[in-house]
Each structure stands twice: as structure tokens, then as C-alpha cells.
Image (cartoon, rainbow, N blue to C red; front, side, top):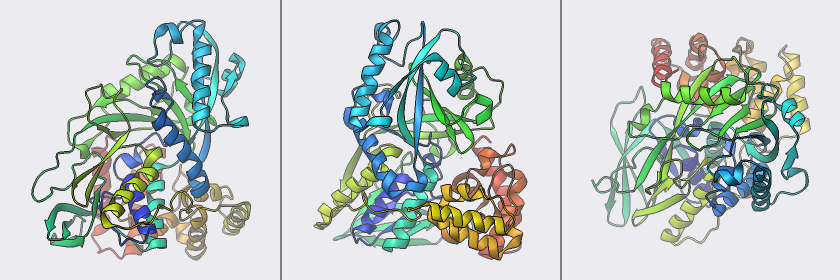
Length: 527
């Protein structure tokens, strides 16, 4: 199997196929998780906003996948409580006003959350709760108290989208022998007798541009917002639409966000907005607008930022400015509804015997979509091997108290903050011990790249183990350095480049080129 696309769904396909014993090569034209798979709201959720649309199967699917990731990717999984405030005179999302405003609001919301709990198998403390006004003000001290009458909390979960993508890939490669290559573009798929020939081209900085060809029996395209490769010279005819989702990034304290997420229940266009705590930051999002331009250049514009800032001040009394903004694209299965109402369900289209394209889907369902795509490929190959990924731990899973203590002790021994262990575990799980070994051997790589708790040793680890080949790979995707820093990591660019040069043995002029290239990448993203 050749998998085209190194986002979270392509990575899930490769991991599932390799775990069933297939010979797998994945190619990605940029860096892994370089598009939407690093620009989501970082949520593993069923989608409470789908309740009014009665997309119960989609909700159930996402909620049940939480249990899978809790077991198999513990270091990338966190339960997260969401709080929905109720205000006198304001309605909730796009339900009829008579149902979600006035005396029926509390009753209808409780009924919806009860259904959400049931779909996710929630019991005991995991079920939704009614909150009084003082409870809400304690959880969110900057919430406007005027006309606030109470609210509810319910439970979902969150992850690090880009790191989950990398964990899928590391599992496919390290445990099951797959090959995953970044900066390798798939240009064509041709049917030749009983095989498929996938034409590739080196897309890297140092590549010589010579074409390559890989023979395969099946091909799965998971290119998300980008078109899959032409088949026998014909462009793809898969129906899909794109929608842009923008997030603003704040310091958590600027919005008064602690360990719970806040749902902003009413917007001008009938959507829910979320304020989500994430690794010491607060993510505000998201927008949902049609997108018709180059998928590789999606970025926030002034209207997106104004929309989000205008709505957050309706609910929170704050004066903080965003640290950053980022934009990702949704791929929607073609229908005639508005993009905000269009289905987030996925389709897998067989363009020719053994040639599959995944359209649509969401982060929460990536593992399941990967398993479904491989089921179809195995049926075509006449292979009867069920998916194992619901129970197989990812590389890095299996954290425990002993691991945390070993890391803390080791960090103290080299004069680093012991709570840096929590950051390392959150990114690498049990692989954090490999980072500690680098720190112990290389004193020059111990300094943390302020204000983030990220070290140059992590640059070395990710270059050696996670295909990091540029400053942007590290600062934008393997870590959140670019979002944490007021200058988005520009002041650390030379140090990151020097570390990469040392590990990857770059030629003498490469560091300068990479530093300039990082500035250009940030500008393209609007940072």
C-alpha cells in the first residue's frame, strides 16, 4: 500500500495497514501534520453542536473513540470539562428560540446533555452537571455576571493533534516496519496490468528533482484539502468543499481560563465558539467560512480575527491581545447546505480498483477512518485480517508514576526544573527518557527556549526520531514554541538551526537559508 498524505488520517491509515502486516509506504509533500492536522481546536469530541442536527452516529463515534485513545495514547489524552453558561435573554446555538431561551432553556439543554452522556456511555462523575452562578464565576472569573443565571458542564477530551499524527507514524514505522517520508510529493497514479504505479518527486530543499516510481497493489489518498494525484492522467472527480476555521491564541490568564473550557452559546451566525485551555494557552475558535483559494495558503484575515474578538468580549471581561492566530481547513462531503451545517461525516471513494480517496472526517474519528480504509483495501487484496488499532498502544504510551519520578530526578541532577518532566511526558510519553539522555550527554542543549519550556535537546531528538528537517517542523508542529513566543520563535531560530545542523550535518550555508525560510513560513501563515 502507498498512502498519500501525512496528516492525521493518512498516518492512521498507514499505522492500521502496517499493523495488519501490509507493506506500507507513506509520502507527504510537506512536513507531517503541516496543514489542518496541526491547526485544529485540539479536541477529541463527539460534537455537541451536532445534537440539534441529530447526527447521533457521528457523535457516538467520536465519543467512543475517546475511550480508545485513553487506553492507547494516554500521554496525548486529557479529559476536559466544558461549561455552557445560560444568560437571560440569550439563546443557544441554532435551536429554535422558544426551546433555548426563557424557561425551557435549562430543560432542553439538560435533555440534550443527557443524550450526549448516553451516546458516550458516561457514568458517575463523567456525566453532565448543573452549575449555579457562583460556580461559573469561580471557574471563569472574567465571565460577565450580568444576566447570567447558571449553566451546565459536560465532559469531553483533548489532545495535541500534530503530536498524535506523529505518534501514529512512529508506531507504523517503529513497530510495524512501514516507511514514512516527508517532502516527497505524489504526482501521479497509473494502472499498469495488475499493479499500480505511483509517480513521486523529491520535494525537499536539497532534492535533485529526479522522478521516482513505487509499485503498489493499493493506494489510499488522504490529502484532506489538497487534490489527490491524477489517476491515469485524469484529475480527481471527488465532490468536496472546503471551509476555513480560524483560532486565536491567548495567554490563559488573559481570558481567566484555568482547567475548564468555556462554550460561548450564541453567535451572529448560529455557531458555538469555544475557549479551550491548552498547555498554558487559551484557544478561541473557530470560524466556519467557505474557502475557494489555494489550500496551501490558508491564513486568518482581519474579518476572522474581528469576528472572534467581537464575540469573546460579549462574554468575557478582558483586555488581553492574541499571541497568535492560525487557520485550518475542513474538507466537507459535498452537499448544498451551508458550510456550518454541512456534514462532518466522511466518505471513502474507490476511484479505480484498489485506488481509494478519503473525503471529510474529523480528528476524533481518525483512527476509525484509517481502519475503515484499510478494511476496504484488504477486501480488494483478499486479505482477511481485522484491525488491531483499537487495542494496540501507540509508541510513547504507558506512562506511570515511576517514569515521572525518574524524569524529575534526572532533571534536578542536571539543574533543570523538575516540572519540565511534565512537558516532556506530554509531548513524548515514555520516549521522554530518550530526551533526558540527550540532555545528560549534551550540556549545551539544556537551556530552555523561553518563554516556552522547550530545550534544544528536543530539537535533536525530533530530528533523529521524528523527521524534523526545518525550524518550522520543530517550532510549529512538533512543539508549540511558535504559539507561545511573542515573536513566534524568530529569536530562537538560529539556535534551532544550529542544533539541526549539528545533528543532520548540514552544509555551511544551510543554517542561514533555514533561518530566512522560517521567517517566510511564518509570514505565509500570517504570523
